Length: 270
Length: 283
Image (cartoon, rainbow over the protein chains, first blue to last red):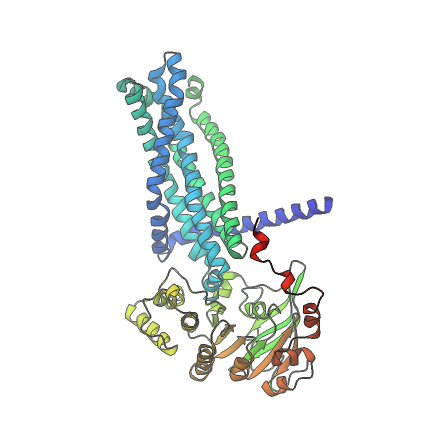
């Protein structure tokens, strides 16, 4: 049993090393790709696949997050006579945490699965080897455009999710609970700062990069056969999901510390 | 391995690709066991052997699609197995590789597949020139007019011919064919064999053909190497291979089942009793 545990640990360390190397090469190649004009059409195509086609699902996700928050939080606030503060609670939750995280999770499912399935199928049908055999770096041709598209568009999609979350929350607050709209927006404007929106959007860069690198890696290393591709897709989603939550925690800590350094008094008052 | 017949073998002055003491393991599985051989420039070398004996892995080493566990790979006397992927890109453009299942990009048309290596390796100024190249390459494999078809709409033989057109798009010096006739009917197989001979004649390329189709091997090969259990056990021209004394070589080229295999088939229990019948699944 100890032998098996040791072998598994060593294998996990080796796999982590492979992933680290793949991620490093992907980031370097993508950085180089920014300066290479021939990468642009490939990035453009991926932006359409990853970004444009994800807009409806992301907007629906955002809207339901805002609406659900309104329904859940109203009773607690109304009990304390603070129902006009509902906007602050909904909007800060949406722009800082729930909007970015749930949009990223939705993207991990929609895009991550598709990227892994596409690259995994290319891998098992030797199409990735074919790319290499013709003197083309598959990281440059296949990974970099996907990574750049995810990196650039996840923050944009998060803005869409935030916007719909804010609108959804406001509609439920006004139409269902009859909250005064003037007070709702005034208190929201006071409680939600540009910093909060910015933190949520910046998280999108990290979430997008994590989804792209993990999904591409799983596609590149998937086992043969339909079962192998299916398993790679599942692993890509699970690992992207865990990475999003871990990154969210790390970025929350970092952003809090930065905020306290630049606005120490405000954080005490707040 | 046998000493190669005169004109073939290791360290020959005209060799273009060479592997020395090549060993490849996947985990604990030994796929290639200390193989040393060289590929003669301008000739067609056929690598034969039973399925799973390491033929495909061997030719993947020629362009370092797979890195050796031990040993070295040389192209024109320069060692290439330790080069980075970026350095290997230039070497690989001098090869054409026909994959067993074609490995055509299914999201691209036939024309886009053939353009791919050209667009990736050269700055294209004149689009018409590219289209002319595609037309010429497709004409060479007898598929001019199929430019706008997608691979999924082609038959197995047509896909292999398109893959061959893509493999020769950069006018390579060496073409590696991985099981070019597998899965094709005898007539389509012979078309592929004729194409291999035509390319050898017209483009003066060096060809390496991996196959277990002996008819194809005899037809296209100037030299035949047989792999068995990861080792090269025979190396020579068609006549030499036909009269080779090694029993495994004779079994393979004559398509005869070995005593060991027969012993497995004669094991206790009939084949019929090992089959599930529909009634086995009924309540």
